[in-house]
Length: 110
Length: 125
Image (cartoon, rainbow over all chains, first blue to last red; front, side):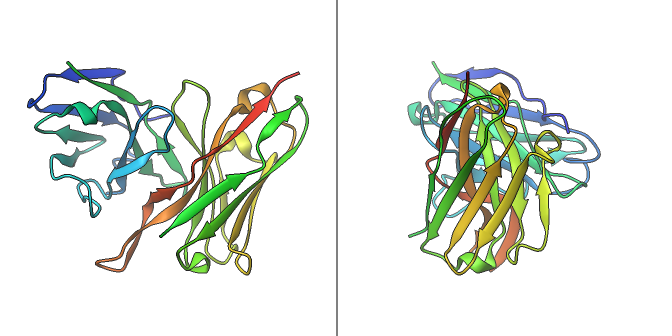
């Protein structure tokens, strides 16, 4: 199972909106609405930000939103803040009852 | 409070074995699917394996099949990963991660809502 494809880096100024894409196949993203997104700060464990494409867990800011179209999912961060600077990973459940993660995107707040 | 605490990491030679453990607390362990996810130094996340709540259903990433064995002891709230025939490329931080659960709706889903702090496995001669 190949990793989902994400841009290596995305940047934006405080207050701006950015989007991170996550490209998969018909065997993962395209087959299920089971895409999740994780934020990881250096030296820390990943934190769940979005599950099932567009659902936010309790406690996650509503500045984070998710969507999906065909084999590509997206995470949008609106009103970018300094604390949003981190690595972000998408993940999808697959038709083989396994999981696949994205390649990861480093978000920089300018 | 949900807590997942991994242990058992360390330095091992190529071809060697290591057994990782994850102690769970703060939730009903026996009702959750559990997972191992790893992250090589400076690299991305990689799913390793999952085990159903009863232990009857187990899945592995292709590169771990035949070398890694996941198991659980629901009486001890413990998850394990036995790693054999270790390779240099298995060097990573190994995280224990719980299957997702939305307490507001009672929904269990294929995502990871709680993670441990990770344990570092270094495979080197």
